[in-house]
Length: 429
Image 1 (tube, rainbow, N blue to C red):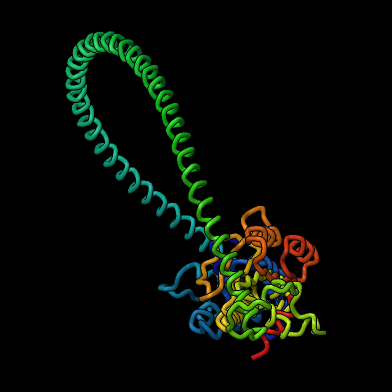
Image 2: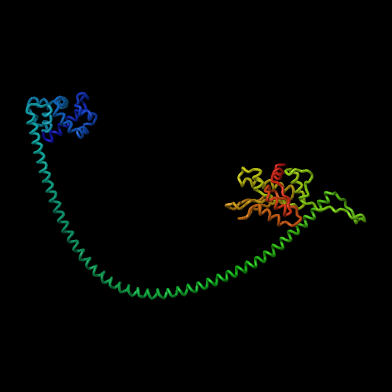
């Protein structure tokens, strides 16, 4: 069977395959029944051709489908005539399926016709291709001749320009050599000047550093002398004034406490008697007051010129440890401000500052001095320095539960009290 006729027969079978019941299909074609006609013609071509050739019943069913689709062509073939206007390929494919009289001759003639038409078409295409190629060849030859003429003209121009450029290059090379020689001479002179300037600058910088160092030493010495004189004078004056105020207010307090009447000196005054001693923080509150009784702190703060020093975080972590450190400081300083206003005592609150990552920005309340320990120093050490800075004889009360702090300030002459005592006093209205 010619290839053209075979493709036409397979196409007809692929179109008719979808309309047949699955039971009427050969076993080899049932898997292609759900394909579209184009996919059946593409993927099942071999299986369709084999089934049409080997299974007459399947071929008869396809012929019946063809009879329904092209009844005129099938009747003409069965009557022994061939329609003049019909396509030879369609006639040969229908004859193969219907198997009318002389079908093999029709198939062979259709193949020969297809081969002859193909040969004629190929010859015509070849002739057209030859004509096209000859036209393109003529165009290419003309373009090549034009390009050749243009390249020759450009080559002449390039040759002339090259000669001009070579002359310029030789002139530039000569100028370059002279410039390089001048550059080497100037570079040598510049290096010598740089070396001289560097030596002079180094000597000037060394002298300037020595002079600055000497000036800094002299300024430091002068400032230290001034600071020592100023601090020595101001510290001594402050200590003396505090001590004097303490003595005066202690005397006034004793006068109020003893309710001594105003009297003039009498002979009996010259008789020897026991002179009352000055009260100290250790002599206060010995009348059976508990260590956490707020009245004890009131008595201590009633002493003239008393200085209350508070270990800040020791108190806040005893009273309200769950609050953030900032809220702890605000709450404690608010209570101390009210206490300082009521008692008129000097109040200093000390916080540990060695773990601070950034400076603390805060406005201390009125009447309360706030201090943070320096880097490398604990709040306990700062408290002991504050106690040692006070003059001998001035009453100092230190609020801290830390045993080491209490022992240290007691040796320095201060009165330690527990943090719970201050918390109880602040809680009382």
